[in-house]
Length: 123
Image 1 (tube, rainbow, N blue to C red):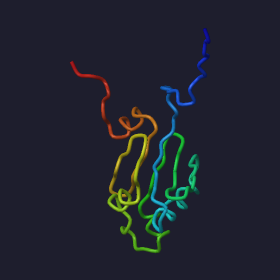
Image 2: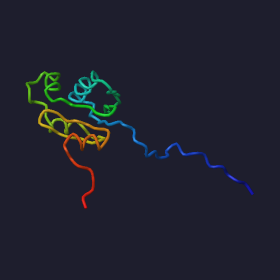
Image 3: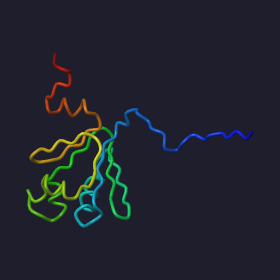
Image 4: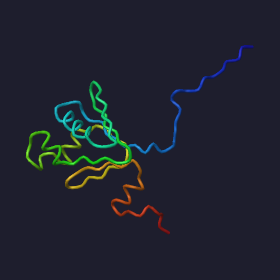
């Protein structure tokens, strides 16, 4: 009788925290500019791909709307949460939209603390 040895799957799951957050942007005129603005920030990695751009960060990253508006050659207030959502196709981490920025947090506890949300279950 032949016995087969199973190899370890390259698709195994890992439930440990990565301390990472990120977005996938469309690889178009706006997405390229947003990615370039983010590339200059600490702990941010930008990975251009054929049809999308990955923007990943350790712990936290802020998409400051006026910085992006300026880089696009537009007036302050042009780039906002709606423009951000239009350029972004996916994200991971906890996202908080504010009037002047979108903040991505890797850890839900950090996001909860930022907005003053108590994560302890009520009785």
